[in-house]
Length: 378
Image (cartoon, rainbow, N blue to C red; front, side, top):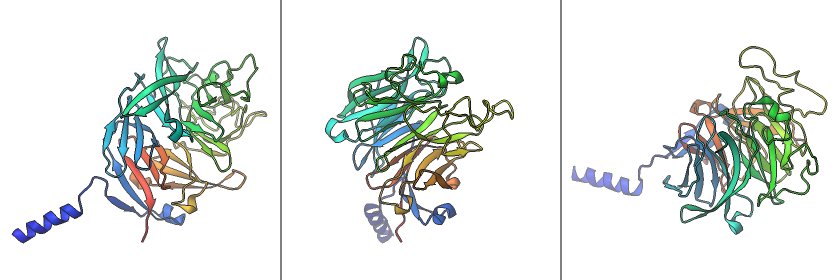
């Protein structure tokens, strides 16, 4: 008996039990893409982890929609609360939303956030930045308090991305008021482009237009839930919620109108009636991909890691309603030529996505878990 106890102690010392032991994933969809992966649970017990970004090779910064920020050690799964978080309006679809770092983060240490605050009894989407020091946010700066006020509690957006030329982009939904998306005098229903310090780039498409806000990069959007810039192709990709059907993947160009609510592939929630006047109209852009029925996208990344060569340049999105990881294959012209739905058996609402420095894919779920996908090496 003593020998058995001694053996168990040795096993525990050299092979400690963890809450995120690797579990091989055996899904036909992944194998059909020529890829085998491990799925590992990294951490859990979060309250709707809405955004996440790597601030080092081992540290993941995560926002909770209720207004909390945590640093996760990806090796141990331990989490540390970040202090000095500003008050957010946590109501409906609003709260603390995305978090992202620019390409020059190591030199500047600026971390960017989008969140919802109350302005004159209405919720508005805000872009802000701060520096992270000793597990606390310092030098908090509101870069843009958007003119997107509405007393509805929906369609705030809002993902953040950066290009290589010193610009930050983020999206705002129509705030549940459809005409906003065609009204350039407010920020609702738009993609916004700013310099990293919050100033307005001189080459934005609506500079000098008296009836348009100069921060606007594109418009006619319903509710952007994913935004990702591809540094290899220099393209800006967006994914947004449609109504009942009609989620869209769009390749974003400056000054373009993406049609909502005049054109749409979706139907009204209250009946089988098409939204708008049809699916096409001159002067309005067509999506690169439409999902019918809706998958309810939660995020978007362009994969550019080395861990999965077969996935180079693919678009990945989390799906909330249909609970899977969505993969789109593009041709050289940016056309979608293939779709795959991965991790369906996990049955989780996948919210945020992040690519690690190792090229692994991390994602969060609305049930409060953080997972990673890494190569399965036989």
